[in-house]
Image 1 (cartoon, helix red, strand yellow):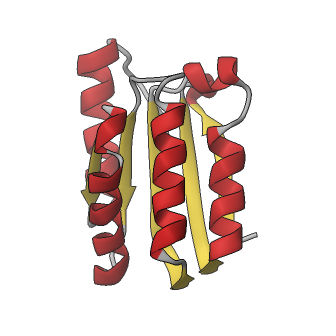
Image 2 (cartoon, rainbow, N blue to C red):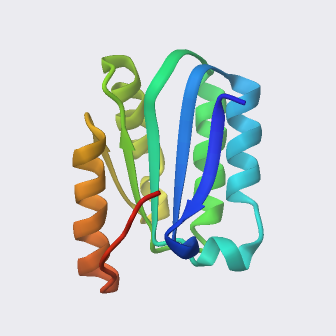
Length: 140
């Protein structure tokens, strides 16, 4: 599957890896499953890192992106605190990340788009330390 979602750092973090060609159906199903999972598990997340660097093509409609954004708003009622970082080295996918930032403004999640993994990881480490007092994240 072109979207892999894995917990890390003892369940306080999650990494979403997008690879290859990502379709509407795959995107919606993966994010829906992630955002509507077990509430107790979802409450523990302090950060999310979305890696868009290995995408080769996106076939996702605006309607699907808006649907996922609405799922994020609902999920934020369960966990209003996580930090959400996206990174993409491609202009198109970076632009999609920036667009998504504006669509999830009602979540109150801190979101930020970056051009590199190092920048995104650095931001997550700094903000998790400041906001939650947690050090030594592996993001693996």
